[in-house]
Length: 371
Length: 188
Image (cartoon, rainbow over all chains, first blue to last red; front, top):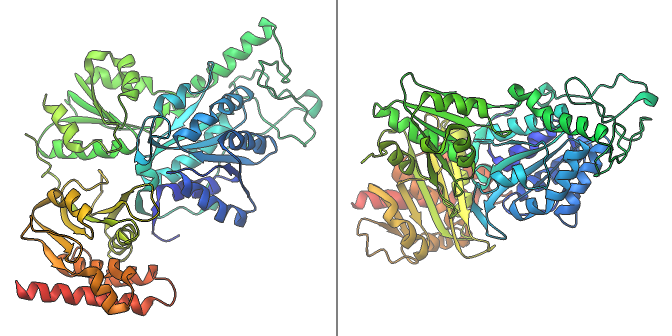
């Protein structure tokens, strides 16, 4: 492929197609609409199906159904639509149906400011649906990474049978950068393999790695799907001897693979006592600030989180042991900073927050290095 | 006080006007000229209101030989303002010694004597009969005054984006922009 100037949202759509996504259901909303536009145009060329649904509740339901029917599925939205999807995200989590939900964050709450950028859905991505549940959220920092992490999102969703949130933002979604995409045929993602005979198949059984293989409906393997707590074949149960092992497996399965799921970029200097930790569009600001500080002779560590959820506790804790101060710039009032504080203690964390639609500036980060 | 002067290889361009004047497209074309045709790195961002026409609209392009981190303009090396609102909002955010270009018919730039005043929209109408080519004229003026991308690159980028049948019109608009800028520099 040749170099093209491409928008983040376009890279997400193409990443999905490259990963084998063949079903897209959605309801357009600024600033995510380009994902739907590209999917509507491109997906049919690959034999996929695009459907515009009546709203985001239905969109989320449709992609769960799409995957149960055997097609890798995705939807894309922004804050207000992401709120509407939460109930069915919980349904995908409890039924362990792989799917990818793109949230191009805009300024909220409520209708907020549709064209303004934000990182205000960090906590909603983790706890937006009710009840304890596993979830993965990935946050790209460039157009090329929007492509790569969308591919990862599909791989993780299949590998761990979980919904994956691609938690991007208006800046990355609408930003254009020159990129050269890889040949789609070189991209391989996890495929489920089932060993059992159809009559022995249990879609929710306990396996050593915590992730039982999933067979689509219509291939002779029978199981039940419900949002109620269920047994190994999917029927509702109230027996604690069935519920407890299920709870332990489902809520523990990501922890079993945490090293594979945790994607971070560590750029550390010997002797640095200050660090900047960031993600998404604010990670670009963080990098700029760190480059300027280093050019002035300061030693600064830089930690970029690509995986936001599960929160990279091990890496953040290790960083906390190296430095006295961790500066956390983000386009909200300190949502990821809560997690950093939980891991390294409140005294070490310096928040740099902005929730008015404007990016944090490198200057705002540099000033906190001097304090 | 820390300054941002640690990163010299970074050129920041802001193109601003009303929605519908084609400033976002002009930014995309400029970024394509820099990245695809001049082989540099470029990042283009934009902001606009919820309206399809009218409202404030701006497009920003950062160009560098190396990696570009913060994607938005911090202090513009050059600003093009095609509306009074755009001028009012952004004229203070130009670097000392930076370039400020305004549409002379639409913008009262008396607060900034150094501004380059050209009737960009009128020039578009006089050159091509269509005011929608004002963005191409603006690109011609910008490139001729700054050499931020090569003339060859901007011409290729404009023509690659021009709808079929409008190539000659856009080529003429770009040339008119170059010439107006040359006249401006020979005068000063």
